[in-house]
Image 1 (cartoon, rainbow, N blue to C red):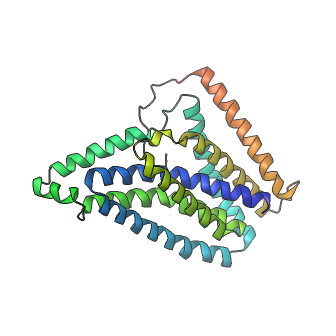
Image 2: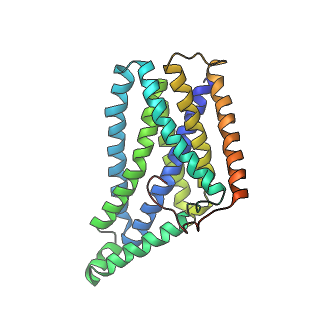
Length: 266
């Protein structure tokens, strides 16, 4: 495997793991508070839809669009996505934005769903406790997995199609989902133990590096060292993020940070 394919696989795995941790938070909350059967059905349904999107969009892109055009357009998209992740990671590392607290989000989601269950009456409450189908649990799990998974699909398609390794990108995403699911099975209520914010910083650096690399390649730029230049770009952006975080920590936050920062794209 070349340097670019190794970094690509790591970038897809890392980004997918981050998004799957956030999806797992929602699925676990739905399963605990409303019933696991419907929550798991919603998860599987969302995963099937996302897989179909990768095949329906990614394969035609990889086969029909000229590679240089694809790299310029996708490189620009990766830059936007990567810089957004990098910006949030620097703000969190410097104390200007609260860390993403999955335990707090989990507890809040459980409370919301349990409250909704209480309004449906005792008979209904007894039914979902025994594993019968529950529309709310299915919908919440489907929505959570689909929304978080859409960013994974975007990353799989952009990285995979522009590099000619769509299958590798898809396998890396599936591997991340499997690993997070196994870990989540044992520590579903201790999701904050996963170093999600550090992973977001690393993924932001890699996505930004790929974006710059492919925009340059698509525009006809011949990078010194070819694929090895990706590692140089990773080092440059990592150093930039470290310097910015240090400088912003010295400045200190100018406003009170939000206690919990949630949301599908955070």
